[in-house]
Image (tube, one colour):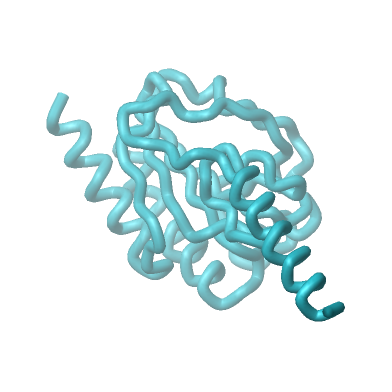
Length: 174
């Protein structure tokens, strides 16, 4: 009896959690605008990115092997992406302090954003069910902050290279 009550409570929590999840963004929709803190504790406002391409890559947890591969791949490809007129931002549910440690440890030349309350992660629909983590998704926004590409379950080692290719393709269509 107690076991079935507990299972029922867990099932209801799962249902409530899935209802709280934001609807997934679609290509062509405006990106949810947000403000948060960078790894340096400075305020970042997505609205200030209007006028050039913006890459938002969401990752589960600073310091883990896959996330380390992903940020290092962006570090190694950042010049190519910036030469295309795009800025890169990594986002996870980590604290400002965790993001700063991760940023310093890997000598990153782009900004990491802290989302310890999961609000941005939820707004972009990338929250893992029942966990305070994001799925590994990447969004490319155009100069009007319209979503132009969404990559889900990306390969952390190849994400940056693919982003550069996608931006090149998107810009060639204009």
